[in-house]
Amino acid sequence: MEKRKFGRARWLLAGLCVVLLLSGCKGMEKAEEKKSIRIGVSLYRGDDTFINNIRGELEKCAKEYEQGHGVKVTLDIQDAKGSQNIQNNQVERFISLGCDVMCINPVDRTAASAMIDKAMTAEVPVVFFNRKPVEEDMDRWDQLFYVGAEARESAVLQGSIVVDRYREDPASLDKNGDGVVSYVLLEGESSHQDSLIRTEWSIQTLKDGGVPIEKITGGIANWERSQASALMEQWLEQYPGRIELVVCNNDDMALGAIDALERAEAEGINLVGIDGTTPGLEAVESGKLMGTVSSDKEQYAGAIFAIAVDKAMGQEIRQELALENGKYYQCPQQIVEKNP
Image (cartoon, rainbow, N blue to C red):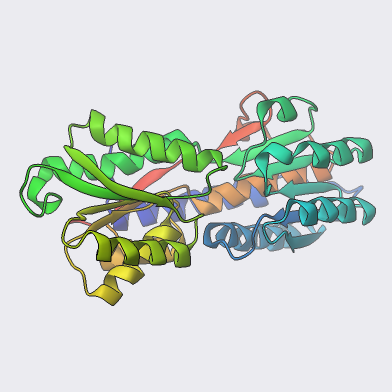
């Protein structure tokens, strides 16, 4: 699996963004019969860094599309604040306002059925993203779509960062030279499919890659920087001098762990994340984070917007998206790291 260093990865991301904006935000035939569209967007939590990055990219796509096609795009973006009941009410509101399509980042992927019921009754297509509803729900209607990054791929890429570094320089990870890399694990929400899969396959990749590992402890920080910081601070006190590696299900938790390390003035501990958020990429560039896995936010948001606009304009979804089973789009991912 090819490993890309930070500078080159960032250049490639920029190139992908340009390609996407040309195809996802600009590359459609202008539909003369429709001069405005309304898209309802519900975020599971507006303060999630990755989701906030996606929101920003969606807004950019809407502006690009308006400028390129003369069609007014109203993005009605709402924060569900982690409440499925609030999100259900937001869906009802979108429908009452006449939204042409809804883009939903579900609070609870197992509770999407009620939202789907409302959408089907009102005949409003739905683009789910980041949290994939269960397959039984996705199969209920041909106007349901999903955009995300394949969780197993994220985890394997994350694990390969550590594997490659260990093969290059075992001592850079095995700081105390005892022949074992002792690690702690910061996990996302216990009910989120990505958290479960990332946890399993990142560690399995380390084992398959021949890295001698020993788990010290782990904990659920719910994707949050502050929770991860509190856990890391606790672990540093409980296991002084033992932690050599911190495996994090996302960048925000990695940043929280870095906050705790800096407060404790602890050095020599490596961290890996997932998501390639803006602050996560900055941490890689500064050397605070050994590496992350970027799911290319520009292309991710561009796919969401492209599907939404195609449905809102009454067009067939563009073939270049190459949706799996006509409804799934998996965003490409790549390693981002800095030279050791």
